[in-house]
Amino acid sequence: MNVIEKARILGASSKWDRCNAVSLSRKSEFRRARFPGIYYSDKSGCVVPIFKVLMSNACSFDCKYCQNSACCSKPKAAFTPEELAELFYRLYKNRLVEGLFLSSAVTCDADLAEERMLEAVRLIREKYRFQGYIHLKILPGISRELLKEACLLADRVSINIEAPSASRLAELSSTKDYKIDLLRRQRWIAKQNLRFGHTTQFVVGAANESDAEILRMLCWQYKKVGLKRAYFSAFKPLKGTPLEHKEETPDERERRLYMADYLLRKYGFPLKEFEQIMVDGNLPKGDPKIHLAMHYFDAPLDINDASYDELLHVPGIGPKSARRIIELREEGKRIRDVKELAALGVVVRRARPFIKIGNSMQSRIGDYL
Ligand code: SF4
Image (cartoon, rainbow, N blue to C red; front, side, top):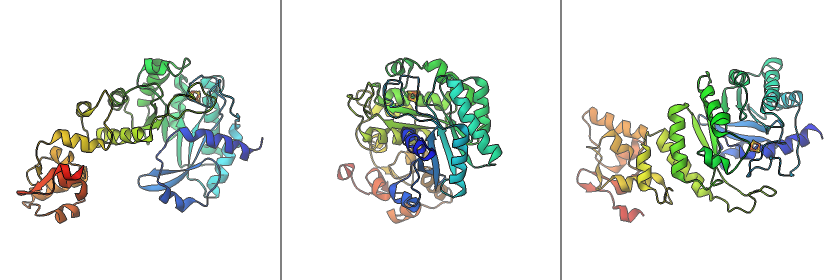
């Protein structure tokens, strides 16, 4: 099998590992790049083409949702470290990619599989002198030494915990130990000095877990192991896997979890507020911020008297616009109309039902829903 065929198989196999994906319209700038495995990532507002690929897709583990698992007969392939390093460098030199996201199936032994990825990255860094962005996957159960080296070579690493608890993971895999292979490795990663920190991923719905379980584990991760961010992948039943007949998870659930995660991570909303709007442990359909606002406000909020925290709870107002409103007030100025609010960055259409300016209500919540 030649390197291009391997890239086609191993690029496609990496699609379930999420990164900062960008919208189709922004992708179109890069349509000319048609090489397998090239994905587009959002890095601080810039669209960056990344070579996202697996070293091998032949796994000895038995995760029930995964087509790389030992029980699935999908075509298998593997790069040698030299092949992967040279291919990446060629793509980079031809300006088709600006970074690498490298993962792997656990071929027979986690240390051996990680070592092969590290060998490829060493070549990329040392032989080809590539100083740009590398995201490396930490495989479950690898040794501390290899983990440390991965953190030295990469800008970001990730280890996928997949499920929100040991018992939920046990429903999906008999080969991964949640506490030892995953959480203990995350604790080790937390002690390393990584430029862009570490991330994780959940397969949403595969183990019949609730949103409450996921958000609880997420809060624990941010607090205890310094997680930078999480990705969510709505479960899709894949042909040839033991879960091929299980119902798929709607993409809206994935989107709701992203929105809730953003509010936890960037706005600092407490978990208990989400728990108050949940129905049977799950977020209600629609935008979590609107549900939270409907629960939070008894009456429209006077924009000129509201605290920072109250402002932050209004849909359409984020940390930046909330700060600007408070700063204006500290300068002795008052907001007079919605045009002034819009000029401060408020999305007036979303905010209207929840606010008033002076004695003037902007609209009613009922008009909005
Ligand atoms: S460890 Fe599990 S999820 Fe990862 S490649 Fe192997 S079977 Fe798939």
